[in-house]
Image (spheres, helix red, strand yellow):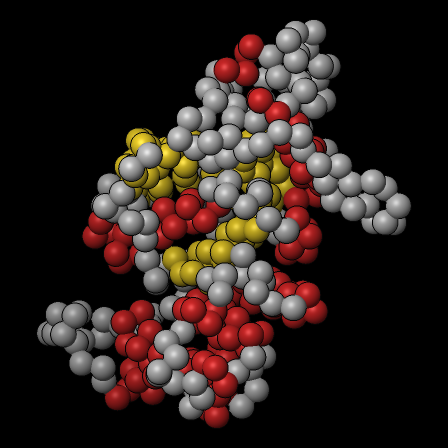
Length: 346
């Protein structure tokens, strides 16, 4: 796709430990366009956060083992070019964590921490003239421009009295305010892509909707793409343009958000949606029989096959992505719209 912002191609990686090699991501493919909000959904432990951290380049290298694939950002393979990755991470790609409290240093004020961010990640950095970037002084004019951008962004995320807020310590503000700070800090470098790793998990339900709405509005106004990792399908419905479903380290389906909820094609996606309560609250929720496979010894081919009533011998080989419509891709030998094969369950 020529206009792609982020392209993940056949990414396979895992971690080697005392028990052996855990194959966490298995041939993952994903594409995002500029300004798109994509939900990366699936059960806890399906590889969402590992994929997000692989994009950021912050996985522990001592145990990491890359088996193949590429992560392309605006045409640059992030896995092949450490210099490009260092220049992109924290500037062109930023991050909103699950728990904002653990991401802020409790012994420094909020203002001191944001000042440190702006010193190194400001879009105005690099105005050092003859100085190397690392040694360039933090000049008065740039500092003033950065401070003005900070105040404007804090107001944009609806944090009152930003000047006063900057003098506070992280423990002196609420959980919702800390998450708004994380959104502001992700926006300040003026990135092309924000990765939001389950950003509302630690918040009250009433605050969750406010944060999601704020993220959607600001991303739209500023033309920023967002990858939202979540196991909450309601969050994906609220703000996403498209959804990619993961199961046990594999991408199984990708679709525009409306089509994802109305015409899912992969058996796992159907089971996932069937586990939700219906809108009227009268329908029975159904679980998914079986267990998530062991990453140390995953089944060959489709990893959902051992739990799928549509599975056959052909599922031992993982199929390529097949188009089901505009922007709708599925990896399944026997998608839901097709008849159940005669040998299924044998």
